[in-house]
Image 1 (cartoon, one colour):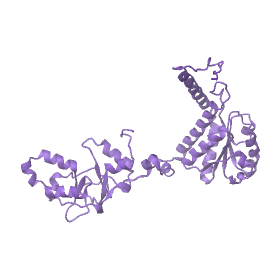
Image 2 (cartoon, rainbow, N blue to C red):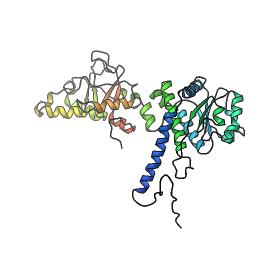
Image 3 (cartoon, rainbow, N blue to C red):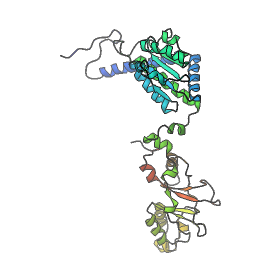
Length: 364
């Protein structure tokens, strides 16, 4: 037998018909949680927030741990907050309150900071842990739904995570309260990142895998075709020699170097340059064309230490002509009169193969 949804005094008949009614109910849930988060933002106490951030600063400076704990749904939120802080460079762990009371409290050192989550502020397991943390001298931050609770009174900083009601129709399931706790944890981490000056490069150290890691860690030097695998042409090389070299290296380009300076970039010839030159010059003049006539003498260049995704952005935003290959120079950006030692060539193909996308690239 199908159970009929119960009515709710505030929402009226709980939506259960086909059509838009379930969407309306879902919308109300989301609006309830969004409103709870907005209300929490309005209740933030500047002094308590600063006290909490100062404790996090001390934790980082002492190379200590942020130990986060909670029971039930608060414990799940605590795990997520711990993972977030770990990802931004602050050593953070989740500690099960039950396990803590049976030996795992030994992981907490005096210089560590504890963040305790409880909607009621009266969670028995956390109250049992509290005096042990106090005796160890560990600083304590409470994220609670009641500022006058026992847990709040026993902590050095208190963050207000209270809500007027839960987002469920029975006002029982932890919904708005967990959303607020999660949001405050995220906000605390984000503000601490800005406060500590965490850079994208710092962030990348903890995210080496996946798309994010590649975007933030791969350098031009990691993906370029090294110059010692390529063969330079003299500026006087004729058209058949250019075609032969393009075919030999098979990377879509060849580079031109003075005979007396075989490692110096004098110009770059791509497959596209060759096609455009043949279209611009009649067949009767092809026999007179040389590498000097075909090459781009001042191509856009990059250095080996540039993030590969930034090189991709330079390729995509060039409006003069499409770029599929960039020379990699030891002194990228130097003038033609400077020593332009070629280290390699970076291909658009290799950037795409590495899974990189720029802000200008279409998303899959």
